[in-house]
Image (tube, rainbow, N blue to C red):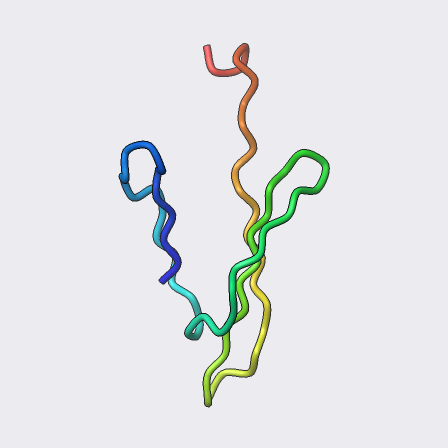
Length: 65
């Protein structure tokens, strides 16, 4: 499982099932103002692969009203 927590409150924000165990350190990068998280996974019966997740884009304050 990949879990995301709010660093201020400790509340779990998301839990995603991975197809195999994590096999490397997570990586993060920014592209055009959007953050991505990449995780390497693999096991004896699952070939190694990189899985990329895009974090939700923040809505402008005007759009939230």
